[in-house]
Image (cartoon, rainbow, N blue to C red; front, side):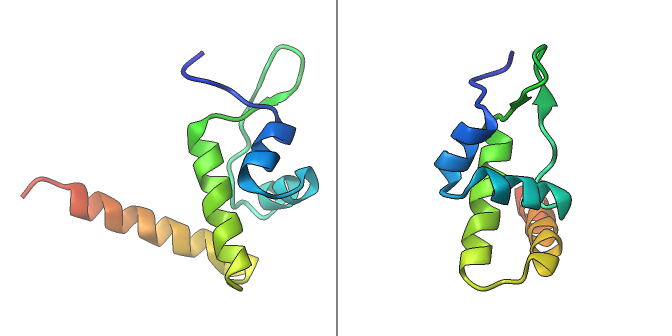
Length: 86
C-alpha cells in the first residue's frame, strides 16, 4: 500500500458527490478505475481523489462532461511543460 486508501463511498463523500456520480465519471472516462482490493472493493488513492474533485468542480461550473476529460488532459500537459527544466 502506498498512502491511505478510501472506499468509493468515502471518495464520493470527499469529493462532494454521490457514489452513482463517481461511477458515471468512470463510465465517461473522466476518472481512472482504481485498483480493487482482495475483497473486490475499489480503493481510491490521492490521485483519484484529486481527479474526482477537479471533475466535480468543472461539472459544477457548467462544463459539459464530454469536454472535461480533454480539458483536464490539456491542463496536465501544460503543467508538465511548466515543470520542465529550462
